[in-house]
Image (cartoon, rainbow, N blue to C red; front, side, top):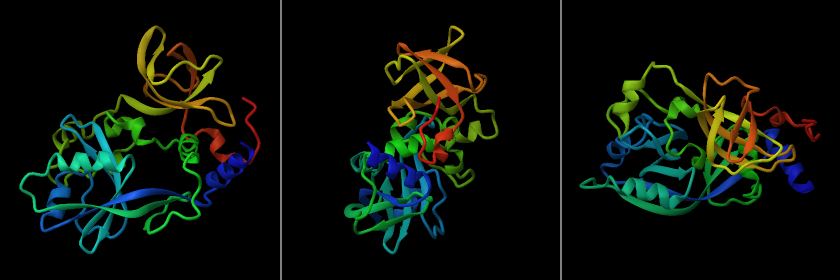
Length: 262
């Protein structure tokens, strides 16, 4: 664990990178119009990597990926499983002249936020470190946000309004400018951890959902989607446990190697 803590400190300090195998090449005469009709981002004139969401007809997140421009079309590096993203896209392929090819490439995510596609993942942090890193930084995994509206999990910046029709666009247009009732928050387990995912209750009423909980050098921490009227510092119940609501990123994201006293 001590070696992992050193790696975690380096990653939180913006050093090093993570590597995720498997990239999709989307190419063909209809590559641009097809992807425009699927992703939340406007991909016309794309000159560098851009995060994009893939919604269902209710505006809820199904998949997410980083999209890279490519001479033949686009490279899509999934934030979840490659098979999941491919299945999502193939579900909407009808008469489109589009080809999906799986390439043995890697999405490199640098701890300072940069992204690139590479032929090798050599030198990357161990895969097991990534969930812990994202948790402390307040960066949700795809499993944390699937089924949620982009604005409820702080990902509205990945939605380009006015780009034209795409799956889920009608719902996003209806909610543009409206107040968001939920937000992504941190959860600190108090005593008994409880089983997650679970509903969260405050003052006897349901106010949200705990999405993830895991052991860290600072005790069990997690992520949840909770109504905005619940203040930070409030104690919530769920899954047989109690949790304190905290803002993201966790204060431990600026960890200097010392354990939290909390």
